[in-house]
Length: 498
Image (cartoon, rainbow, N blue to C red; front, side, top):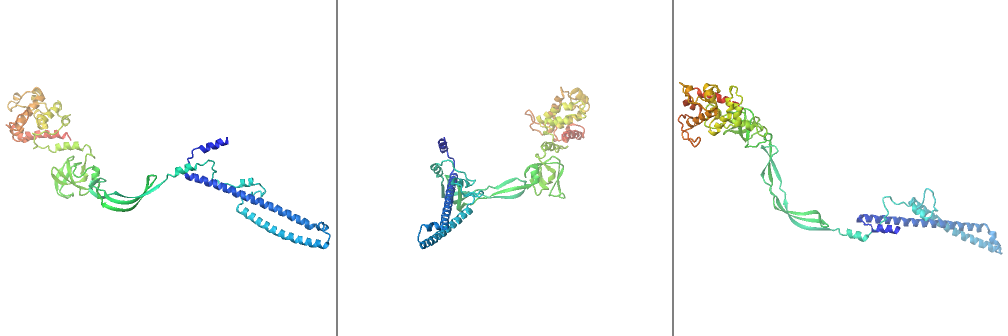
């Protein structure tokens, strides 16, 4: 049973490394040394004990012989010889006793020294009993607690084989390596804060490097550089770092389009005291040209350059609805009594529907119902549809006239001053009348002769005196103030967009 157990332990795979094995060998060696020293001390102790007993017996025997002289004298007849022999024996015994006592003293001193040096490992100090046998003395020797007796067999050949493969190799080489380029930065107040612009791309340099590389079991572990030689110097990268809070807040750059968030005055210089160049309406767009500081910027407004305070500007990033408002405002700033009418308004169908929805004076809802018709005239015939609707409002008194009610004629088209009702045209619908009048204005009043208009036709321009309200007024209506009255309706309708 015991042998099987030992064999199983011997056959168990040994996963210990070399340092663990050496530690176990040291523990075993320490244990064996301790046992050998203990046995040696035990023998010395036994010899001392035996010598002490022998000396005691000899001393007792001498004392007996010395105290019984009569027994000796009886065996010797001459009296004088007895005295001489006794005297001689006493002297010899005294010399021998002195030598033994000196030896005993030396042994006692040696024992005391051993006890002083190894008090706990050799003797039991508590009991003072020095007569224990060698096995009990060995048991009193203590083994340090941090050591463990090795109870497993060691396969030294396997251990040496496993650890003999460790190998360090060093080699000296020369390599061409890249040199990192440095990054140089400079502040730019014309860039949004935190934004970076590369002014010059960085280029890596080259160098020859002599070095010693160290490998352990084929794996690189370290290198020592001996010398470097530059082949090509690196080119630094140059960065512009933005510092403008104004640009960062609006998320814009120089050259972008920005918009006014209030009415403002364009000035010749970056100062409130500078000369006025133009007045710009709210929502109008301008182009950002320069940023001399965070309070003023140079802009271009319809080819007019000047300076505006930065606090009157916004952007789509900050005000998403600004683009739509700008579109409407761009239309409105061009609304004036001298505006050209032979052009589309640029309004959408939704714009027309918004303009004509819930008009207070459109009691019959005629204009709201025909908002899309006016939009179609705008796009189809390249004419200002608001102008066409304003004529209809003015001539029909918002669609309440007898001609409008009876003949679907919102314009009094065909009427003469002497017989307005009788001479006016009658249409099948308001839409029919609106389109007929629009085509007549485009062909005879609004465009110069030869202008391409619709259906492959060209303008005849029989009554053309310019594409403005005043030009149309000269041949279309006898009332000299007709154009101002029509414009008042146009202005009212346009303002419903804002």
